[in-house]
Length: 153
Image (cartoon, rainbow, N blue to C red; front, side, top):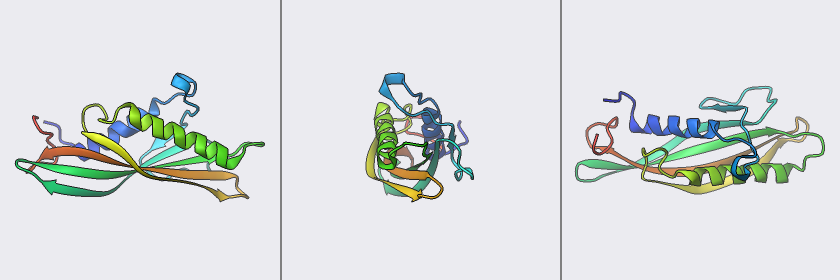
């Protein structure tokens, strides 16, 4: 039996998946220098994706729980000379949105994934760093008495 919760396995699967994103592959324009589940490094010198779990809602069903986990995909980009900030941030955000639709079940751990919000902003014109966020809801299920066990495990 897996000792990690289904929630933790999903977060790991999301991080592992994004580490595989490569610029030029299937028209993606982003390669992450770092995919982390902690805070962004400082100073920021390359493109970073930070994955954070948000609130989770649960509904008890007969023998299992339906869980909706909010996941925040926060990205950071240091602008190069000549970059148009909004254009670069929107380009990266589109890559994230497309990537999330490649496998909405995150390797069979989830039932569905839906984007619920997004935003981009230039953190500070003086430090030439932009940031954005894509917020997704991941629907998954686990047995009613053990959040480590998926249905059928």
